Length: 78
Picture 1 (cartoon, one colour):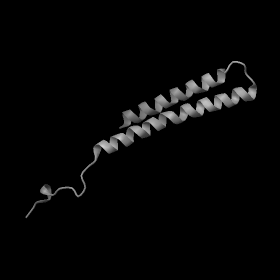
Picture 2: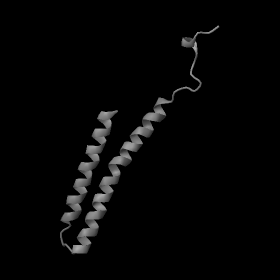
Picture 3: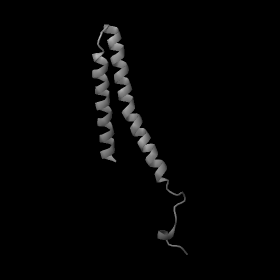
Picture 4: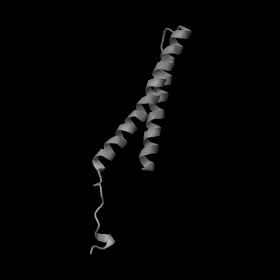
């Protein structure tokens, strides 16, 4: 007879796959605000007919900062 402590799990745990999906999600979570910031800045610069694309730079850097913030927050939580 086997005791409950000796029973093996039905499915083996697959930790490498879980961590790769976690980091893929984190990369997407960083990429989305960056892309949105740059595209919004480009559209606003085109709409306002700015010669210097300062809104693209400002909103793009804001997207980078937001992406890094979200990634660090998610990394610390886990």
